[in-house]
Amino acid sequence: MPEMDDSFIGLNGGEIFHEMMLRQGVKHVFGYPGGAILPVFDAIYNSKHFEFILPKHEQGAGHMAEGYARATGKPGVVLVTSGPGATNVITPMQDALLDGTPMVVFCGQVPTTAIGTDAFQEADVIGISRACTKWNVMVKNVAELPLRIKEAFEIATSGRPGPVLVDLPKDVTAAILRRAIPTQSTLPSHPSAATIAAREVSKKQLDAAISRVARLVNVSKKPIIYAGHGILGHPDGPKLLKELTEKAQIPVTTTLLGLGAYDEMDEKALHMLGMHGAAYANMAMQEADLILALGARFDDRVTGNIAKFAPQARAAAAQNRGGIVHFEIMPKNINKVVQATEAVEGDVTVNLSYLLPQVKKVEPRPEWFAQIKDWKERFPLSSYEHETPDGLIKPQQLIERLSNMTNHMKDRTIISTGVGQHQMWVAQHFRWRYPRTMVTSGGLGTMGFGLPSAIGAKVGRPDALVIDIDGDASFNMTLTELSTANQFNIGVKVIVLNNEEQGMVTQWQSLFYDDRFAHTHQKNPDFVKLSEAMGVPARRVSKPADVDEALRWLIEGSGEGPAFLEVMTDKKVPVLPMVPGGNALHDFLVYDETKEKARREALKKKGF
Image 1 (cartoon, rainbow, N blue to C red):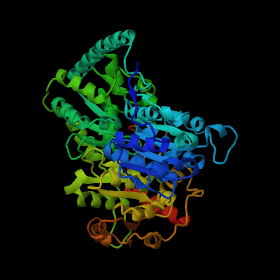
Image 2: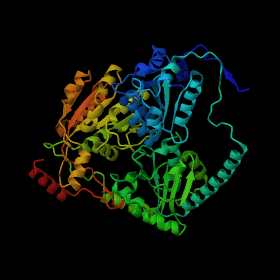
Image 3: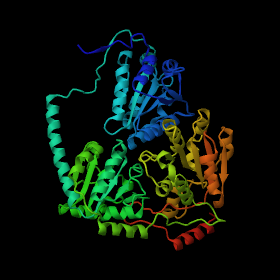
Image 4: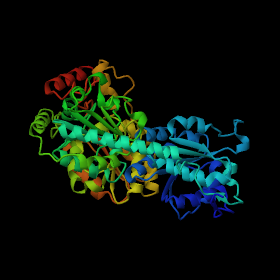
């Protein structure tokens, strides 16, 4: 007889949901009520189990849950109604799926008797969300609700984390449980003999792969570590990464989502690589004889032209003295983009712990690091058009000032961004030193992500200074959530870099479409008045000489609650370096003073 649980007898579905949140350790829920989910909202009325954050839009709830998860490592929880309530969370779920963010979404549904009748606010959310979740399920009766909720949290946080969705028909959440229910999950927990045997074979294969990788590390002359978001999945990941770099003297470059995995003040740090990454990181990837990809998936923004990617590592692989090693938790990602010389499947942190004892301690690699030093001197990230005292604010310099101003508290400073030029400037010019301090939309590139994700991060880390650095176009998409921050006194600080354009798109239009700026300039509201109308203190700064004082006000003088700073920046400022689409990773554009002046003059003649 299976073990039975009678603790839910007498509770309705909404009350079971409430109890399961307690058992799962949920402290915060983000959501929006509606008719189909009212039995649940009635059950959580005045709940002492968790704090409920009510946004202005369900998309805001989803991004808040993402920010919460990224800052804490715990799953973000969303509770919304049926129909448009559920469909409004589709974008955050797809965002979470691409970025490996654990999120559990509960949505209302019309009663089971009305499904398929085109009832009011009915939507086939299971069908709609199938492609943007790890797993989704409709709960058909109240007896299965506790197990489905338990499974949802297990799936969201196991393997590569991601979003799951639980669809809750109204008659299920209103029904009362009258009998004891089995406690055993329907997820496989007791493997068969065949599965155990397969695991033993797999462990032997893993051990052999680890040994081969260790040999490659030990014989390589110019190795590089390419660390992605996966290294942040376990608290020990960054620590083991540091141990490997110290023991084998290997420089480290990170992806956008991997920022913070390695201290960028360390001399072995190469900072972010890729389309808008550091030129020296890109050069090192192309010249390395061994690439150790740790929890990264070879995104197209990282590799550039695949046929021309990592030529030296591929040549070394042919001679059995290097190559491309892929540590990856999802088998489907191995060899999907780049053919790996060796693939190490499984949790990257666990597998690093197996690798480290087999790696030989080496002295610093003088030739390799001398070459890297030369690249850093030739292609510094500080190479851009700097501001003059009576000129316009340059976004890069503002971010550098903010980075310096928070240097003493980097371990408790979290930066979120929207998507666009500002996102890349933040990645390039803020110095990342600690894990889970960068919260941004990577794979999907979701504009409007910055503010709600910052709110979620601050809810999860109330001790931290949380700053949303946004662009005006991106901020416009979810700016109503400033009112949410005020309502719940969530002390996020917001910086909007206002150049009155969709900067990343205009950059491409300038480079590749002969300055034909088609529909990329918007008329913004008065952000300061709008913020004040929402109860959020706000300032505007437009002169370089006033930037430091404005930043100090935002960080130190604006109080414990939310605050807003609008920064009027120079326009048509390009994000450089840049690897144009189709180019090899080493074929990048860098700042050239003569070319930049000529570009400015040409734009002036065209009226910009």
